[in-house]
Image (cartoon, rainbow, N blue to C red; front, side, top):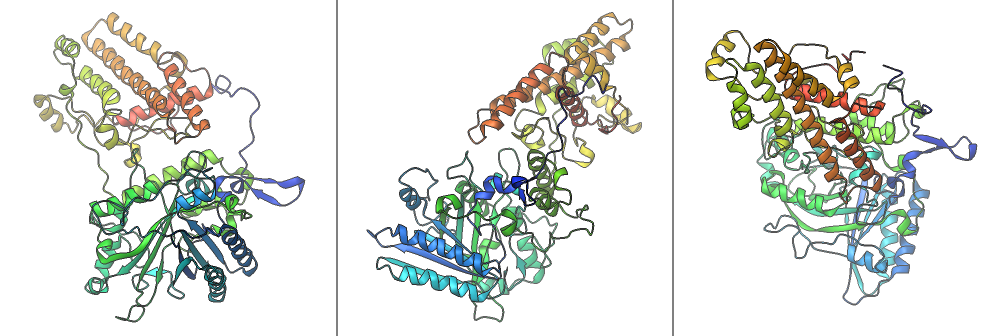
Length: 629
């Protein structure tokens, strides 16, 4: 077995996450060569102790003052680099203004028209503006100096107006200092590259981003009438930052948890801060200056629409005074020197729990952060970027159950799917339960997995463009499908119940002989089962082989459906050329496996995993570790 499926050629060494420059001792992390490594310095530096927000507006017909503004941006960065104490300045632009400054050489997403960001709602405002500076530091003195630098330069322009809003001094928690913002932020390079930073497949330069700002004012009259428990239920977290497992559909963590076309959660990077002091009580801020980043404005709009549609409790306690959508140029676009990722991207204290020996991990965010930024003890042995990206998707998916109740719908009875040929076959046998079992397996794998609405509700039909091995295990305990297709008649159900069995009671803890299908291939094994059924001497044996053939035809249909899905995805414009090529290879591999036996290690692994997925989907719990070699 080992020699038969050995990978051809020289075995590669473990993927390295760092290299040494010019043979020296300075370690250069791979993350700095990714799109995240070209991000504007300071954009990813979250949770500063102090902040200031500067909104700049040009008068109609004003001079662009481009040279002076670019010089100011460079001066701000130079000051922050020299000052230390996490002192940063981030500048964003009206997308149309930045396009003009680039002489049309870049195409960006635009702001919606009108005074509000989403139709039929006045909750989220679009007050415009031409530039927005987000100044941040752990030092009040340095924040003051940054504000002075911005004010002095902008005051020199007669045709420019601006206003400055300071954050609440020394506090980065909201609603009276109770709740932390940004706990769900991605902390790893792969997820940030995928969801926050613009790349070659997005509108914008590599290393850029889009920003949403909203200056929210809190309604303390409403908040004052809420108990601590009610406030926690409104947010979906405790004041100690624990997730609350509650079934309130209007809690903020639930309403803000957007799902994409694959049922997955696309991420944003939040950096909100409280501002001002409210006179109604000690320690009460006036509101929160909401700031978040993503690689597309559409994600912001989709989240805002969902908040309104689901009547999010939190937004009922606030109103927005100003805000808009902005483009965040990359370091390259601004002529700035990029800053190493680990100098600005840090873990929040809640996640920064490291073992003494450096080899243990206590939460998924710490694991992903250290693995993707070169923070693991043995850097050369960390997984590849592709594997870590997929790992991040899996870990994010595991957390989905915190935000919504996951369940699978009932599968229709087998009678719903039977063809005339199926019914004719069943009429030939007095007690055709085994054949009905095989037909139920066939239609589950051929229809339920890949056909709406079941394909979305069961979440069993998707491919990530970086996957080599495709197929999806059920999401419930032990990867076991929670629903199976009923195929017993009403007369058979009572005796079965008395024996303590039903259609879902087939868990046998057996060890499949995968070697058979690897040696023969799926198509040849189906032929063998069909021939055995024809030559069988008894009805019972005939039914067994027919059932086996039908079940394997279901596996064949399952694999064919994934070939179709890979082919459809391979033309998607949001994927890179490398990802499209990978999807085409997956398509060709799946097409081959429906007809031929595997010839390479990758093909054999794919066929084995497809069989493993199919067993679990139809309710047969088998450990992947029970491989028969």
